[in-house]
Amino acid sequence: MKKLSGKKWTLGLLVVVMMWVLAACGGGNGGGKNAEAANAPASSAGAASKEPILIGMSTEATGDNAMNSVNLYQGVQVAVDQVNAKGGIDGRLVELVVRDTEQNPTRGISIIRDFSQKEKVLAAIGGFHSTVMLAQSPIIMEEKFPFMVATSNVPASVESGMPWTFGVRMNANITAQYALKFIKEHFQTTKIAVLHENGGYGKGAAAAMTKVLEAEGLKPVAVESFDNAKDKDMTAQVNRAKQAGAEVIYLFGQGAANGYVLQAMDKLGWKVPIVGENGMANKGAQEVGKELAEGTYAIQTANFNVDQTRETAKVFLADFTAKFGHIPTTFASAAQGYDGAMMLFQAIEKAGLSGDLAKDREAIKNTLETNLGTYSGVIKDWEQAFTPENHDAVDVNSYLMCVWKDGKLVISDKQ
Image (tube, rainbow, N blue to C red; front, top):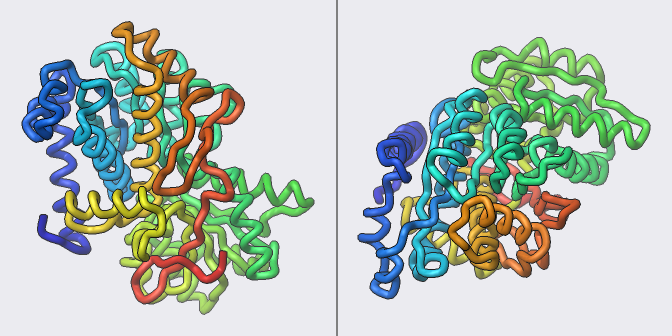
C-alpha cells in the first residue's frame, strides 16, 4: 500500500474503512467470509468449510473521532489476520462484522441489539466514543453479550455493575491517578486546570481528576468545557484557567480542539505544561497547534516511533505496517484494539464453543473473568488480566508518558 500523509492519508483511509463498513452492512453475516476464506493459507483450508466465528466491531468510522477509531479498527484487524493465518479458532475463521455508530448513541444501541439478536454475533469489541459507549453498556448487560471496550475511558462503561463489558482501555480514574503523580513529581505543583470537551470522554476525565485531587484534600483551580466539534476560539476558557492560577493544564479534547486551546494560550502569552491522553496523541492537535504542540504530553499505552522491545509488539508492528503501509497514528488505540481482540480470541478458544449462542457467550464471560490465563501483549504481560471484581486490564503500570518532539510523538524522558 502506498504510504500517504496528512489530510490525504486520513481521507483515503476513511474511504477504505467506509468500504469495509458498507461491505459488512451488505451481507447478513458481515460480508467478509468469502474474502477471508480466499486469503486463508493452505493449512486452514479445512477452516474455510466451517461457519466463521462472527465478532462484532462497533466504532466511529465517521466524524471527528475517525482517526482514533480507524487505528482501533486496524489493530483489531491485525489480530484477526494473525489468528486466521494459523487456521482460526478450532478450525473456524474469525470474521469481523463492522458497524459505524456515527457518534450517535441511539444508533449505537441499535447496533448492539442487532449484533446480539439478528446477526448472531458471538462477542464484540470497540467503544471509542464515550457518550455512545455509555448508552451501549446497559444494553450489553441486558443482552448478556461479551464486549471488549478498547478505548472509551469512561469508568462507568465497565465498572458500576457492568458484568459483560471488559476494558483494555485507559480508565479515566486510573489515568488521573497516573497523571497527578506525574505532575507532582515532574512539575512540583497541584494547581491543575481541567479543560475538556463536553462529551463522555471529557466529562469522565474531569470527574476523575477532580476525584483524585479531592482524595488529597485538593480541587482543580478551574474546570472549563468546550464543544469539541464546534468551538474554535478557546480564549475565554483558557483565560479563566490562567486567571485561576493554573500551573498545569489537564487537557481532554479530541485532536484539532486541543490545537485551538494551544492557539488561545499563545494568544494570551501563557505557557504552562499540558498533559493529555489519546486526544493529545491525535495528529489533529499537532496539525492545528503546529509548533505550539512541541513539548505537550500525551499519556499512551504504547509508542511505535521507537524500536520495540517486546516480541509481540515487534510482530504486531511489522504486520500492521505490511498491511496498512504506515505505523499506527494513534498508538494506544491500535495497541489496545489488538490486545483486546487477542484476549477475546484466547477466551473463545479456552471456553470452547458448543453452538448454543447464549451458553457460549456466558462461557466466554466466565473465562475472561477466571480462566484467561497468561497473555503476552503489545502493551505488557498479564498473568490474569481480569477478575470477577475487576474488568479493567490496564493499570497504572501499563502507562507510558509520551511527548511531542520535532513533529513526532516520542517516549518522554520523564516517566
